[in-house]
Amino acid sequence: MDIDQRAHRLYYGDNWSGGLDVFDISTREPKYLQTIRMRGMLYGVSVARNVNKVFVGLSMSLVAVVDIDPASPTFHTVIAQVDTGGRGASASWVAYDETNDVVHAAAIAGGKPAPLSFPWPAV
Picture 1 (cartoon, rainbow, N blue to C red):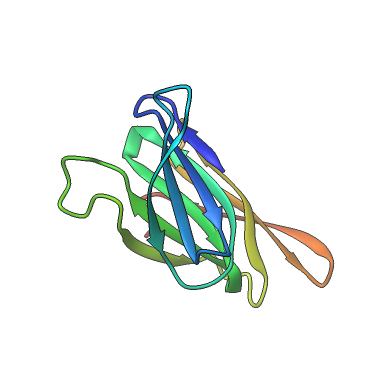
Picture 2: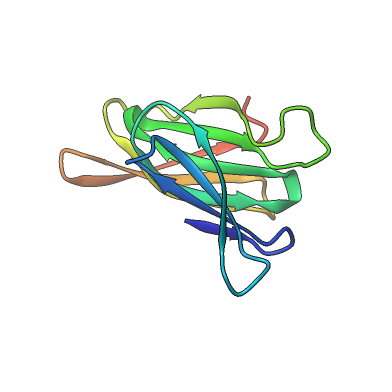
């Protein structure tokens, strides 16, 4: 789960609904807006406001990239999936480093954490 402070949106990885739930939190009472569907189990969520993206850690060491620019024709859709190379691990604990434009994730494989990083935009 992460919050886009500027847009007053909460993004919540919801495995029961099969996607990324979006809530409007601009008032005292949060309002459910939609679920952005994606395949795989969701583990970590990180808002990257400076590039208008949400990065979502998925099973099979994938990271989904969601467009959060309201002016974009692909607003609130999955625009890419990046394979972090974790081989069978789940990409969780996702974080975005705004200074260096790098997405960090940790994968658990065989009970041990393995750090994963890739530049954004992914090469």
